[in-house]
Amino acid sequence: MSPTRRALLGSAALGVAGALAGCLGGGAGDANDPEAESDRRQTSGTDSDPTVVKPRNPDGESVLLDGSETNGAGEPVPIGRELVTSASRANELLVAEGVGDADRERTRTFLDETDYDAETVYVSQGGVRSCQRLVIHSVSWRPGHVEYEYCRELRPPDEACEADAGVALALLFRLPVALDGRLTGSGSSGRTPCRTTETEYAVIDGNATVPGNETAIDEGGDAS
Image (cartoon, rainbow, N blue to C red):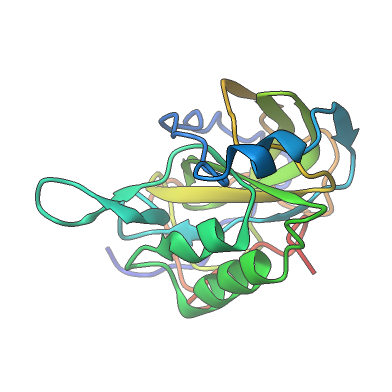
C-alpha cells in the first residue's frame, strides 16, 4: 500500500473502533512479605486528571511482559491487568520487542520514578486502532478493583498510522495511593468519538497509510 496523506473530512463522524481487548492478569506486589502487604492501605478514590502513559506496539500482541514468568517455550508471558506495588516488581516488567524506543524509555522512566511507598501503578493491556488514541478522563479504585473512563479520537495527522489496522496498547496509571497487590476485578467505560476534542478533523480515508514519526506518542493525557 503506497503511503498517502490523511484525508481530513471535518464534517464526517468517526467510525466506531474495535473494543479494547485484554486478558486479566494476576496481581503482583510483595507476595513474599504478607506483613508488608497487610500494611498497605485499603481505600477508595477517584483521580479526574490521572498520570498515565500509553505505550503501543504496532508489531505484536503485547506491550508489557512478565520477566519473572515464562511459557513452555521459555519466553516471558504477557502482562494482563495488574497492580504494581513495589520497585522490585516493576523491575521484572519487560517492554516487548516492537515497541518504539521513545515509548520504551517513557515506560521505564514512569515505572522507575513511581514512589511505591505512597503510589501504585495499575497496568491494563488491550488494543486500539492504529489511527486512534485514547483520551483518559478518570481512574477510580476501591479494594481489589480499578476502573477508568476514556474516549477515542483520531491521532494528529503527523503521527504514523495505518487505517483499519489494530495495535497492542498498554495503559499504565499512577494511582496516588499505596494499594495492596490484590486485583479481583477491573473495568473501563468509554465512547467514540470524544464529545470535545482539540482536533479539527473527523475521518481518515479507509485506504490510507499515513506517514509520520517513527515512534508515535500520544500528547494528551500522558505522564509529564
